[in-house]
Length: 616
Image 1 (cartoon, rainbow, N blue to C red):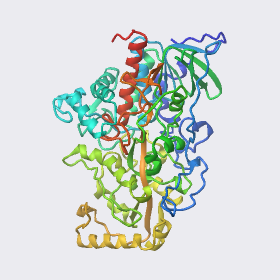
Image 2: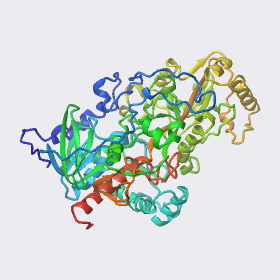
Image 3: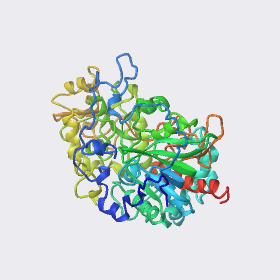
Image 4: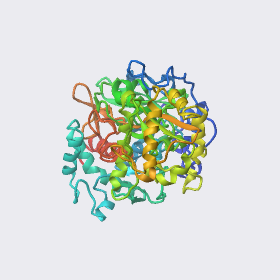
């Protein structure tokens, strides 16, 4: 495998973790099974809010409303973000000596990176995979399902495909291009449509035990529980790590990439990493570098510049592992173009922690996040009712999944780009009747596989209490006090509640999109609760421009030799100007599926183009 050729005697890092070590360590280094406060060493593992407390210092907002008095957008607190830098990272020159050598270097060991490394090594390449965190899986392992609109073998057995059966990738591409307002590259979308199902079947061949979901537009690992969506994909990422490791991928953990290496001819020939966060090492990649280390959900400056709708409408991110945009900035540093401007993917219920001095990124299953996603009375700052999108599967499971993103758009787009939820002291009595499904289900200690969840979040009450203590969830003795402290004009909240209570008394909602009668609960019992929410960002769709071979393309329109990128470092998976990345929770495959497929395509194309001379 990778050879140290400096003559310094440094050991290969392939033995840093074994498959058994991953099983034994679980998610501890990721903050997925720990309740200890974040410390400096854990920050680089993405664990800076694992225990529910603020691990960074952020100044409280100057005002409580989402916009300034003149109606202009009031910026987020930069100090609440892990990163705030949009400048390109320039490449390094070829060194006199290299520390490690391989055919292909994969940057990132999340869902995309693990697949890229496994696919490349399967096809005969000598592969090094570098990762900033202490264990594999990245943000992908926190996903609850892998969306797919057709082409997966399990769907074939059920005779399911979209837009109609039998599966036709061209028909799916045509439908998606219309959804994307023809702002995407049809060749790239077509390849995703063709290869999406194949990538999941390939993962099954590598050891991932899939099952078709309750709704046939997604798959999940077989061992995962049926009744909620907590860290289901960890089984999949663990399996892909085990496959890559067993077949010779040389994993370098706690070694974040800091720069690309470019030779005099403009070819990308390597990567500089900060090994153990202490020592710079140069990795020579004779054939290709694959960037698949995620996007920039947690970089304020990049959001402001490339996805302004997310910068305005999202109140938080739930990707706590990385997402600072370093790989995107490295691509910019070697002249890469950008695709997918102003496109992102968000869930509903982004709680505005940062406006109250808290952190920007939170664990998705934080109790306050899940509480905010229930069908409470929701208004804009004018007092207008906002529609709720039901996630109960009922007769149309696809619509139940769409609801998770559609509600984000509803909450992101009112005046001021924030919404307001309100309920009274009896709120806990109503949760069972709401019966929300998918990732809106509140966590309790008795759920299956709850051990995968950080201990602090295993009971949803803890996160809610955190929010009350931080005054993010405002608890007041009167509606007038709550109205004032949410930053609403006098009468806005009290009048909206009065109208709501009238409907509850009648037992029939008169709103344009009426709530079911069983959800009509009057707001009468103090204390009263209110919270400001927006979108909950989970994927940036702006990124490096790639062609259908996953090769990064420069601003001159030419391929940058030796450089490949998978989603979400790459952009363009859903065109431009998309609030939530439709058609299905981010792209044709949803965000984690997009990462899985992108890694598979990168590994395939890099070997075919750079080692096999373009021969499949």
